[in-house]
Image (cartoon, helix red, strand yellow):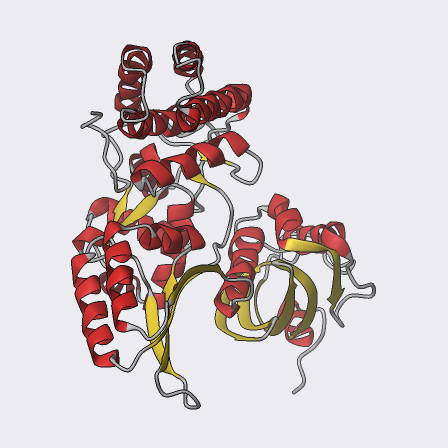
Length: 468
């Protein structure tokens, strides 16, 4: 059954090959439609893979043929409602494919990496030598490993690279990533679309989101195929919480170690910690962090996890709790939003991202401006003004987060190429340092305070004489 399709995000050789797979398996929908609950799981697994691939490729011919096959399968189901789950599953699949077909014409192919970034340098390295780890890449690029992690998440979110955890968490480029890396190496700026891969605005495309979720449920098909990805910006981590009361903690601890060993290669936890209640000595809580809520739920649904939980129940004084949690407040997530603003809005000149990152009621505080900026429109006007006068490149040298506030120590350099404060272009280079504090509310930038070396910049431009 669909043996050529990989389960762990390994992409096919190229988009053409994936299209051929989709075409071949479209016929499968009609030939092996399920007629009983017993056959439903196997059929749903294969069909869900097909749905994901067809939706992500926006292959209208396959989607139309698949929709017809699903409707035929629905018509052949038992009419006496003896298989209500099967009827619901086929109906839902048909709705997903119909929605994907409606959206197919809106898919946009685009280049998604700026050559002048750490992300681009990282992409070039892993395209040239697949299998590099965070530590290896940090050494080659001369940056902190955390910078590799951040840029790796960015490349992964854009379908350019994936982290192969089965091979010591090494990085590999997707076919579309290899194509993008070649463009970075040649430094060509072409407007035509890339040959492989698709970026779908996941926040707007319900069809692909449903197909992706359906695939996760049926086959743990965690990563989007063919280098396609949902463009949703920073992703909040997810948590798995195990809360138990037991006088046999050493046995529980050994059981947990055994569980970790059993799911090696499947477990994607990034951090875990166990706490003991001082006021209640037999009360223990373990919190495991995952890259996303979906990853936490996926690990929760592993057969090994279910087995481990049943064994823990036997060791506990009362039934323990095993819960997947969505993080609603996370300082690392807040820092990622600000990093995205500096890197993608300011450095990559993607002003369209401002509407997504900034709160509708955003208020800016900058002593260098006569009038503070309000809302995303005000931010866009302010940023456009600076970028029309300077070809600036920013670096966020250091970030700290406290509650909802993120403080960034930054520097930027560039050339004065346009009018600024009424002064014509001087073609002089400037280097500016500053500090910004941003407050995050409801996942968006709600307020900002800027303090930067305006006088030093004016002196470098020769507009103000430097003190002797």
